[in-house]
Length: 207
Length: 139
Image 1: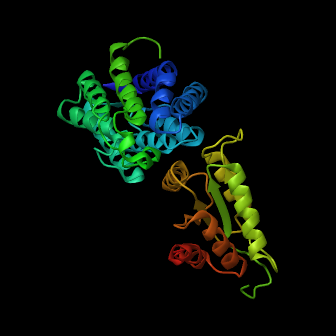
Image 2: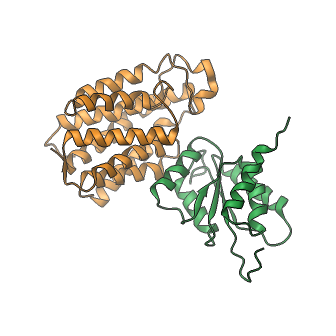
Image 3: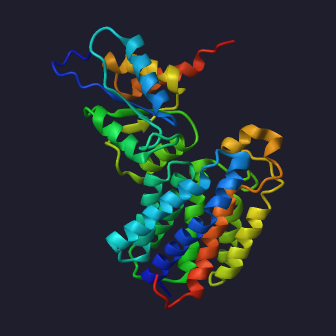
């Protein structure tokens, strides 16, 4: 079972990973975007950890709702409402259960990814975060406890965006020149799924 | 005007990635719509520290400022401005009830929306007036 501490640990690990990788995310975004993805996500996840410390939400769903709200409120770029919608839709799916099964988390994340696709109007293959998130939720649907496999699928999905031509967001204005660069949103998505696997490995440690 | 003694127009919020753009478009719309009482219009551009981007906080504050109880029409430019307003509306928090994202070009739509709102149009009519800007082809 996954308890509230697991979800706090997941988001705290996300924040640490985003903090470490922010320069790389911004570098990727400089190639085909507006060079603010790392800074934006760093600000958003710093707000998430501050809110988790301050408000101490009491269930997995409440952790995700609070974190999603912080991302929408503070990121300042498109990744804020998109990741915010991912977490909030997943949080709503989990309701107020004190613990959830990996299968319940997999189903909730599927709902979150569907909501992200609905908000942004993107599909896999458009060179967006969906190219990492979709393979991750597909992997989890087949094996809900295999967080490591989901992380690998997300990382592969992010790498697979390199040859793609962007069809959404600012990168789409570049046309063919968007090809040959890894999508920053898919890259940060892979970090968030990797943090899920790390949260499982660090079970029992303080969040 | 509706003929009511109390003028309760639809409010308008302009969301741009740039604070300068949002403020300038609001000023331009006010100048072009001029004559008589104007509906409230507020700019929500850029980030709170003056950078380029979208701020949910500034959007929420602007919407509260212009809300007179008749609804708020939100016009946006692109990317995160669209997604942030949609996410806020989907979540049902931070924005006054009767807030609507209007599908219109920011500059031209702002003029149409402000003229209509100032004439006492309801939210549907304000949204239509703003959207009409798409039908005016330039070539």
